[in-house]
Amino acid sequence: MAVWQTGLDGLNWLDELVKHQIAIDLGGDGYPLEYTAMAVHIIPRIRVEPPEARSVWTYHPGDIITEKWLGKTTRDAAAMDACRPDEWLIIQAWDES
Image (cartoon, rainbow, N blue to C red; front, side):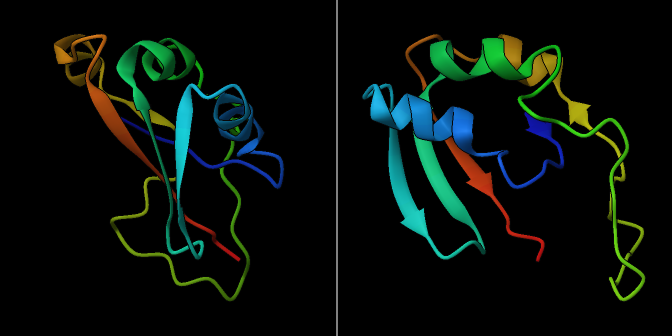
């Protein structure tokens, strides 16, 4: 539904949802980390501007960039609109370090 790049504090919003028992931390090692929460709690937060999204994506000279690298935040409004509020979503966070 959405893909974006963020900085070191980019998962704080998800950690807050977990703290308030609105989301569940499914664990992972950063390749990826996974969370789950109902659409009603996620979609409004990512629809316009995802939390902590970088307006310009960054990369380092040694990074391998392929044609699949988006380089910008993307959102799929049709996919968001198709979700029921009580539908459980999986959120994946990939560590780019």
